[in-house]
Structures are given as C-alpha cells and as structure tokens.
Length: 304
View 1 (cartoon, rainbow, N blue to C red):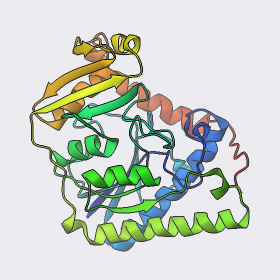
View 2: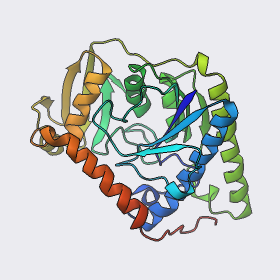
View 3: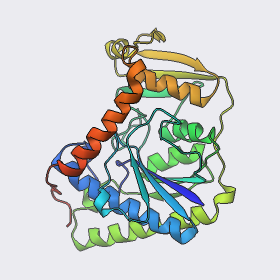
View 4: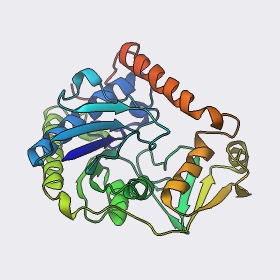
C-alpha cells in the first residue's frame, strides 16, 4: 500500500501562534521542527498499519516546511506545487492520504489562523455552503480515486473536516499557549499527542478499505468571498463573475473547479502560459532557500 502523508502546519502539536507558521521567520523554524515531529509520528503509524511505501507531500504555502534532514528516511519527500499531472504532482499510485496539521476554514470565529486555500478569502462557498480545505482538497483527490483517511488539527478544524470525511480517523491538537510552555507537563502532552498521531495513523491504514474517496457530483458552483472588493478586483484577472467582494464560477467537476480557483489565486492571466516553468523555478528556489539559508530557530517560550 502506498500512503501519502500530506502536511499543512497550523494544526501541529507545539504551535500556538501565527508567527510559528509564517515562512522565513525564526519562529517558523521552530514550527518546522514541530511539524516534522508530527509527520514522523504519522510515518511510523502508517508503517505500523501496513504501508509499504510512504510519500510526504508538504502543502503549506510553497512547501518545504518539513526539515528534510530530520524526516524519517524511509519516506520519500515532495515539496512545492505542481501543474501536471495534478496540483500535488504525480499521485496516481497513492492508495490513501493522511492529512496532518490542518486548520479551520476562512471565517471560523475563534479558530487558530483560519483560512481556506489562500489567506485573501473571508469565506469560500461551494453550492451555497461554506467549505473548508478538506471539502475542496478531499473532493479534488477523490476524483483521482484517492480517499483521505486521517486528519489532525485543532478541534474546530477536525469537526469541519469530519463533516466531509466522516470515515476518517482524527486527532485533536491543543492550540493554547499554556499547552506548550508549561515545562514537564508540556513535554508529557507533546509525547502523548504524537503517540495518538501514531496510533490513529496506524488505525487508518489498517482500515483503508473502508475509507471512501470524496466525490461531489457536478455541476459545482463556487463563490470566493475576498476580504474586500478591491482585493477581489485585483485577483480576478480572468473576468469571473464578480459582485462586490464575491467572485463566482461554475465547473462540471472538482478538478475543473479547483483549476479555476488556482487561476484566481496563483495564476493571473498574464503569467498563466508560463505556469509550468514558474512552478519548477519556485520549487527549486524554496528547496534551496529553506534547506540551506533558513534563519536560526527561535522557540520563544516553548519547552525545549
């Protein structure tokens, strides 16, 4: 069985403030270490559950958030965004995906760093219903026949994900500062939490046959609500239907709709013809930068 471990960062154990998720900061270096420990726990669990091959896909911002030299060497690593054969690269032989460190949807009150796909949105709706990333990414992957069978993150993020993926195993992660700045108590919580990651990942892989690809029947109607109308106008280079801060489009399926969402957020009309070499250059640049030229870590008040 080939298991894909997809990783965001906001829902990692050990992270409690936004700077720890912002690429390029010293606090992010600490956050990278937290994420890598979580991913390693899930890798171990996946192998315990019967995985033969594991590929780690880093999906936060441009990718390359995991500390590759600290990652379990049994797993293959793939960072950055792709154009073909999918946004995540070659995923045709994946049997199951375990999604680590997710966050809540844009507009979720009281959540830690909530956003959906990109930070410019105050809400994303699909067929008139607010959705989170697991709705969109799960349905995109589902059209390739690949189920998401595990999620970890703060409680509200997990609740949102399980509405779309009710069969998935899950682990809830505390986002309160005191969970990670309380000395021996925090060390115990981190160890216990990562053991829960291992156990839940193993259970998901053992029960992969009951995990279902999420497929949403079309047609699909998308609404991306930007934080303000000026921002919507700046991003809407494709002349999608726009009313104030809301940009709308229709698609026959999620693969088509997700491509249009990426046009809106990542690929303005002028650069769209150059998206393949651009994506390659971005992956190469951030692999080098984040591996060899990242700042020294600053854990702040976190336990060491």
